[in-house]
Image (cartoon, rainbow over all chains, first blue to last red; front, top):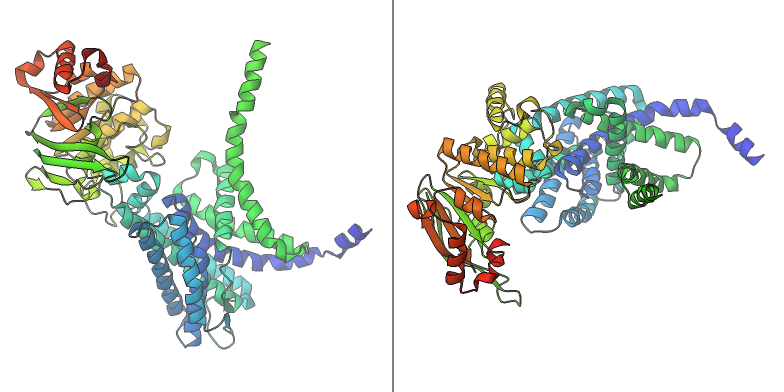
Length: 317
Length: 264
């Protein structure tokens, strides 16, 4: 009876009404996911800086807009701040020999303090009525269009960049550092470049997000690495399923962003089902774990010790 | 072309695992020399190659390539002068990049990586011609990811990458050791033809004494961080396996029955 009551209390119209908002958020997070894609997939470097640099992007953008700086310029500044964060992680890793994951965590932790300083507190609001913002949840449709245009431009730039000599060198560094060195590539420089580029995108995403929601919060980046990974992985699985071998670099980038959108649509459904929001992060982590595990388990299902044993037993019989 | 003067390298200095890997190596390679290097495990063959490529700085001595002192030059900058093929076929190529992309990376060895497009149309034509020479049919699979190739194909590709832009020095570190005998033979033949065609100064480490005798114009034997034998010219041409084993026993001060040290 209680269950019936629960289901009858769900209003499909509410879900429909929440969809555009989720799409807008998904596209904005998709930019962040592009950054994660660069480090995680191309450079083979699990960069945890992003939890910090996402909030940095938000903080810098909001504070500058409040100070009267036009929104596009504020965004440009947050991109620079993101690059700087990536540079710090890169230098910690290459110059000081600190393992990649730890280097990212160290920058992330220090960014927490830096963000508090920038915000001079835990959060700052920016009202769309008083300032000209690029995106705002007050006008979701225009936010979706603007964010999509930005994403299209970014994907074009990334597609071009990773086709250049420099971009190829970054991909080679991620694929095989030994070979890269033997071919005269300075792999330390390439790692730093990729980290700067990645965190620039993450901060840009944070800057857009803070405008969209109308405030920057010290905690807005928490767990963003997992959201980014979720987007990258969901996009990959979907892309592979739809295009298989025809998945080229262009499509991979598009599907990373689509992964972000799908992630937020799923979140929308979860919220609509009135599941406790406290469980969101647990759910996200579970999604990422499952999607990371599936390719591994599939490969294992084809060749496992248990299976080998069974085949051997059948032959003997 | 290559000049090693009194090269010393000790690993784990001052610890219980201290190992004197190179003990004052002197070596001079003339332009066009094709030198084979033999020696047992731990003799210092790979260490010598790593010293030349600059994997780490040497403790003592100087390294010059074509008259340029490179002792203080880092690995990726030395790559401008050096083409390398590793023992492990996985190490010389980027598995999740296309054949063309791998070749394009190698074609730019020693150059700044700019924002120009990574592979030009003219290059593709050039690569196609070069791949044809390998005789493996790779010219028809240029957009295939290298990870899908066999070990022998990858090693042949690495060889092409190492020589696509003519290096002052070609270093082969047991580059056929991980291949089956027929494939190893094929890669060795390719090596010979590429070295000859480009008149490359080459240093080839091998565990196979017959290969060491049959290839190149000079043979080095290493033991305990030293070059203990250096034969070239007519003497090298008439060299037999038994001579080498005997010489090894004399020079290394070990009995002939332990020649497995050399063969291993």
